Image (cartoon, rainbow over all chains, first blue to last red):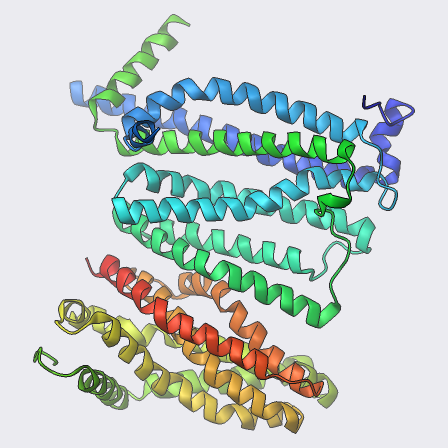
Length: 60
Length: 253
Length: 230
């Protein structure tokens, strides 16, 4: 069974002195994922809003 | 199977079917990515040569693979659009470009961050970094070409032709860059992707992360494609019904 | 122009090339401008980087190749633009002759007009950039095999963008990444020769790419032109 490889949480965050590189890599990765999920959701909201406005114009 | 595939070719059915798939896909992705990343970050032993730094590889390697894979996928859907005139195929191909570009950018960024401690510099003209950079140029070209056209149809066909031209050139470009690299600096033998040398406790989490990232890619692709469907089918009755349904839901909330 | 459908294939190609050359000599800018661009751009490198001959000989093949590549890319505008505007591109697409060969003939004549002068001047500039004599022959052979590939790929990009009003920089973004293999093997031939290694293998590779480009790119050009003209 895999074991926790670090003595403490602080050591985990320090990543054996490579904290900067490891955590900024994972940070960039997380940002990319967030962008690719949030952008379509916002875009969908915009599209639906525009569609509603168009439907109201047409029915008016 | 074939029936199912044909149904996905209709924008409306694609929309309603993916409605059902998305929750499942999301849960599987969250579980895979969560376990894989936690495992890779904290529960696998450090590399004896690179120490903790090699943990970057858990995201770098799948990103770099997906950068190429996404381009191949875009080309396949482009071919599908050109040959069978399936509109959904073009919408998927259109969705591939920005996702692929952002994945390629992350592959480059993680590659350089990994390079600082391993190579002592954040950028070297390593064959893989260079061909990933060129990959990014190819994506940027596709996005730029699409946005230059006013007509959706012409833009779609032009992009399809360009991505097919790109996919024919891709192996040649990759081969030439590999050759160029050996000429100018000798092959760098710091490659992490040769899994043969890696023990199971290293590659099992990599497997989890890899499939998790694939799941994320599919979700992002489906979300973008659905938006494109809504936009292009906005005159269809089912889209109006959908928007009205949405209105009711938000009215209740 | 070529409305006689019983004309043989060879004479169609000859007629197309002759027409293109005639048009080029009526507007000599198409011949002179790529050449002048090449000359001026090459001159900028010693002025910007220093005239030290050791430095220059290190970058000579790269400078000549990159400048040639850019000159070809900028010259692409004259391949389809005028024909697109006066409608003869539409006629070309509807011509009874096989489009594949008509397009090859057009690209061939563009190569004669825009690339051949550069090719003739390239050794002169190679010497001015202090390239050792052993590098000159592989440079010319490389350019001879490589520039037609660049023209064919550039024609695809131009065909895709000819319908757009401002296409200059878009064209660069589209086709420069595709130019990389030619650049790599072209400059590689010169470096190999300067290290007294054989370069015929690379030349053969370049030839293979040329054959591939001749086979496939007219198809892509035709598809792209149909999109742009419609």
